[in-house]
Length: 321
Image (tube, rainbow, N blue to C red; front, side, top):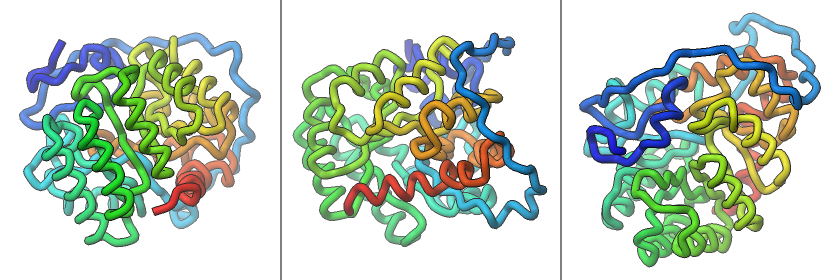
């Protein structure tokens, strides 16, 4: 099944029914069907509650929390932007909105790369990212997005992005955009190159894909976006529990799941406070909603700081530019 722009998203359409995650198309805006919300039973294996911190008004809290976003999709110079109704069409507007939400730093990848149909397009998108990183020096880090179906160009581009442009991140890789399967030999070669370059791999998955990647690539440092996937309640606890079992893996708060009351606290309690990262999925989703959930959560002040910025800073110290 495809959306009105021809992108295969049948499984992610389910993911979007009860979440606010964008579908992977740009203006003109596609139409979406939203399912009804329904309450779910408490999960029987939830860890002990995290100790709640003393609540303070945001005016006193504001300066306390730095926000370092692990998951940003920036618009391209040609006008490609992932929003249902585009309001931040340029990179300057993208930055201005991040200023408004309080996101001081971030890891950016290009929508142009995500939608690329040729190596020339994903290379051009990565070069746009490099120019933005240079222009806003110290504010953004670049993430390389490539397509393993063009494996020779993809491997060369990962190396060039790392050695020439200083990128330390590969992804978010979204296999529904090309599409391709994570089980193909070319993806294995891509992961091997990422490990060789000592870079972080960021990959969008359903639970079964997550299980395969974790089992197949224990040597990789992997960030999995989104607490949940297309199966919502059935998989969200399993995804969190799976990451908790593998110290080379991290989970970011973007997209679906963090907004469900208790799930952030469950993730921190199960995985630990050091491997949950703040990610917003902007320009698709609003970073301020994720920041508010973290600030208002039943986490300690130390845990909030770790999730919002310190964990990502620590992770980046393990990879070299």
